Length: 370
Image 1: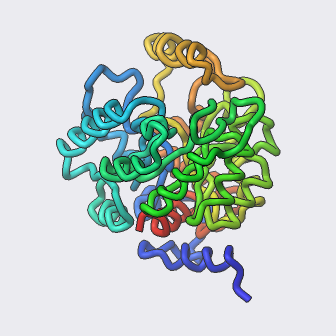
Image 2: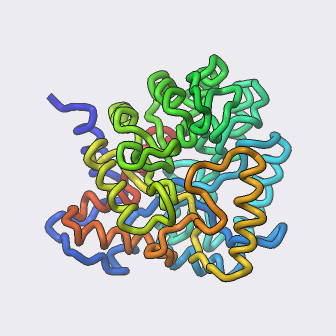
Image 3: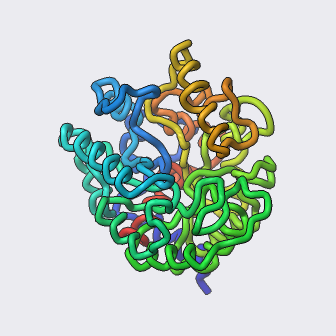
């Protein structure tokens, strides 16, 4: 009898964008082969930090997008503000994309994703990391869809009307409003995302979702006991419902200090062991360009990112003024090719690597977005 996971594996392998042959596996991932793959970062931003107010996509950013080899990123536009603020953020990105029609494309569907790959354009999908814009009214999820939002995260670290975030010490679970939001997200064929959500709230949400869920950017709690990471029981629950877990390149992969590529690989391999190779992907929670750690950036990070997060009460353990959102060895824009090559050299099959780099999220989005 074919199990749910086996059936999903067959679906992934039968993608409209074919995988390279298993027989062609090698411990290297050449740029030519890499450029033929579907590569997805389920939580990323095409921007440069710090960006001037109102800045568009500069030639340097477009060059980094090309170098990255990415087919699709999901970029955050809100979650903790007002609907008016979200609308303004979306309008800015819409305008920026429209200025570069030969290089960029706003992704709304699987057909758009396939078109991005065929045309060699860099695809950007929109998401929200929270539900504050809904103002307690689940019917406003429809407005999110109208704006082009395709992935909806329930909460961001703290308590909201939908449920508790990962930094709430006594997670009370999902609320009736949270259940209504998930029902609307499912009905409207958007992707529900349980990143940043408390373990009990996430478990409740995974249980009630009628479509495959995602945790787009997280790590493995059983390796590193950090509240932003997800325990094995919940990782399995996501996989059992056909969902995908994206591993981030963040400091939460370690108990103290800056993470490195070995930490990324360790969490990825643990997630594969727990979930199966059809349910793991990448969600770096970073930026596409290489991070330049000069004095200007260090000042920006401390004054404009870290200290405001402390004041807002959303800072998590192991964040710091001198700890950054990247793994140094994966700093170049083509970090996904470097990761794929590392996985090949560690004995993972080419077919598995291609699923991790993008095939699994492509399959998931085909089931949710249509």
